[in-house]
Structure formats: C-alpha cells, structure tokens
Image 1 (cartoon, rainbow, N blue to C red):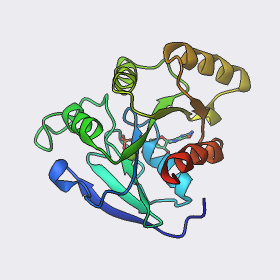
Image 2: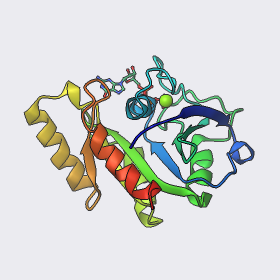
Image 3: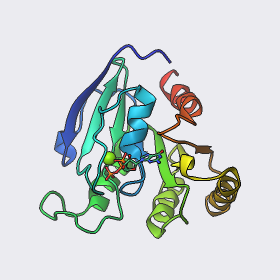
Image 4: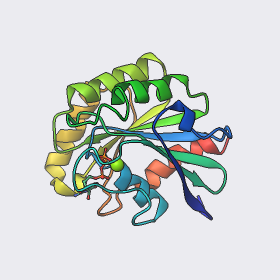
Length: 192
Ligand SMILES: Nc1nc2c(ncn2[C@@H]2O[C@H](COP(=O)(O)OP(=O)(O)OP(=O)(O)O)[C@@H](O)[C@H]2O)c(=O)[nH]1
Ligand SMILES: [Mg+2]
C-alpha cells in the first residue's frame, strides 16, 4: 500500500475521546512492552510516530493514527503491567474491553505476543475473548530478531498449539521481518 499521509490524531482516556468519523480501524493489542508502538512505527516507516517506551506501561491511552485519510491504526494500552495509575481509568481491562466490544468500525485486531516467552494468562484471555466474540484477528510473534531459527520454530509451534486456528506472522521491528505480510492482512480489510 502506498502511504501518502500519516498523522497522530489524538489520545483518548475514555470513550468520549474516541474519533468519530467512522473510518475503518485496525487495533494493536498485547501486553506492555511487547512492541505495539514499535510495530506501528515499522509499518508506517516512521521512527517516532508512536512513542516507544523504555519503561513498560508507557502507552496509557488509546492513540489514534490516521493513514491516507482512509483508516486508523489504534495503539491500545498494554496489559499486564502492575503500576497503572488508577485515576486515569478504573482498569486497562475496562477501557480495552469497552473499545473492543462496542467498536463497530474495528475491522482487524492485531494481537502481539513476545516470541521469546511462553504466552501469558492475559495473552490467552485476550485471545479467548477475540475468538469468543468472533473478532477478525491475526497473531504477531514479535522480537524474532532475538531468536535463532531453531528457537523461532519452537516458539511458533507453541503459539500454534495454544492459539489454534489463528493466523500467525513472525515479526521484528529491528529487521523489518513480517512487515509485508502484516500489510497484506491490513489491506484485505481496508480495501474492501
Ligand atoms: N529486539 C527487539 N526489540 C523490540 C522489538 N519491538 C520492540 N522492541 C523493544 O521493546 C521495548 C518496548 O517496545 P514498545 O513498542 O514501546 O512496546 P509497547 O507494546 O508499545 O509497550 P507499551 O506502550 O508499554 O504497552 C522497546 O525497548 C523496543 O525498542 C523487536 O521487534 N525486536
Ligand atoms: Mg506502546
């Protein structure tokens, strides 16, 4: 896809802050520090568009990025990080669930999983939820630059086993691996 324009539109801390022009949305989900913001930057070819964190839990809001004036990338706060300031929202879970469950223009959920580790209980919970509500989704095994070819095969078969039936794409924001295949999935939902 030719990207002619990309802009950060806004950060939302609750549903009142969501954009409301009904363009298709692609959501990026996964635990804190898994590489959501880095993947968004990779896909868009921008170094610092989505803030990449040194400390986990950095993305504390739902962030909307408009691409080609046609569709949005939505960077959701990571889960599994304990030190979350309660006052921003009751719980990350509530905010994310409200978005996922009620968002009509949500066309694709991109769930990131750290290829180096066993998927967490929260990874499984999110996947259960996506499959239960029949959300179109794709799994991204991230940070594969950190694994040997052999370790990667082990990791991918573990992910396949735990998340049966889902499409899985290995990716690295460092080497760019996976970028084209992820774009294919996105194009399939925004170009219809
Ligand atoms: N080696 C390697 N490091 C990565 C990759 N993707 C992200 N990182 C690093 O992982 C850390 C977290 O990346 P982020 O993109 O901020 O992760 P996030 O999921 O947006 O995190 P939160 O916003 O806290 O939920 C940063 O130090 C990144 O540089 C990758 O593919 N390979
Ligand atoms: Mg982030």
